[in-house]
Amino acid sequence: MTFNLKPFFIAAGLLLLLSSCSKVYTPALYHQDIAYMPKPASFDSVSTKVYASAGLNVYPDAYFQDMVVSGQANISVGHTFKNFNLAYGAFTEFGDYQNSNENTASPNYFSDRSFGAVGGRFSANVYKKLNHADFRFIGFEAAYSHEFGDYANFKKSFKTEDSYYVDPRTDLVSVGLTSEVVFNSAENPQLHHGLRGFLGITLGHNPLNDTLNKDDENGDRVFREVFPKFSYFINYKHLFGIIDVGNGFMGRVGYSF
Image 1 (cartoon, rainbow, N blue to C red):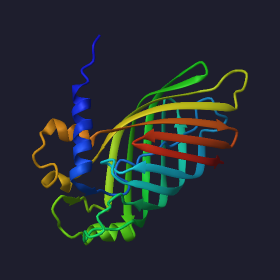
Image 2 (image 1 turned 45 degrees about the vertical axis):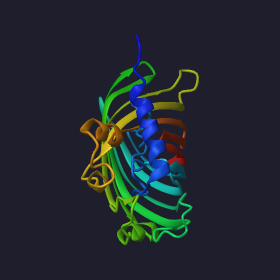
Image 3 (image 1 turned 60 degrees about the horizontal axis):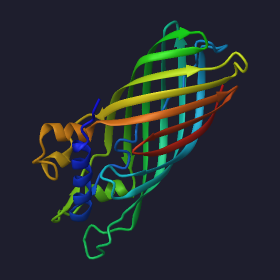
Image 4 (image 1 turned 30 degrees about the horizontal axis):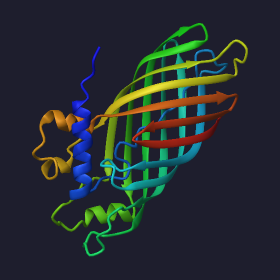
């Protein structure tokens, strides 16, 4: 079997060209609003749990030009039924958008700007129990976020300038499909592990498609809009930890009750 790497080299070349010629400002949580939502396993002693967590996010913007560092707090409720589970919850995030632009003469120049966000998430899976594992073979995830603060205000008052582009949206809705397995062992049934893959998109019209990306073909836009995430979950009694990786890193620790 052979793999055609040409599209990846083309994408890398376009990103390199873009970083040297244009400056783009996107929403702080663009492709970062989806996060793993824990749920009880079928082999847990209870079928409903409340999960509270906090953690750190570090990621580049969607065009790999700037960096974002933020802290996030989450609370959610997970339910497990026979062959089906779901979770819903809310989150808040506060962070710093760090600008790589060195052109101090630009009217759009800033070194860094703070931002905040609030939002909600929903997750549901169908699963099949097999020995000490729940195979959540297909799932649906959705997230809504509203951004506010200094960086959001900057985008709204953005001054049009050659080679500078902005996506001023402050409300994002992302959806996607997941596949996951959660398992334990007979030797230590209170220690659970989970692995999840996600593939999704952010809904709505992207204003950059009218400016920066207006000459792109539909296939190029789809390649840019679709985003993956991979998650690892570990749970021991009431304590749990989560790592989400994709275009960036999110680590959280929490407590369930």
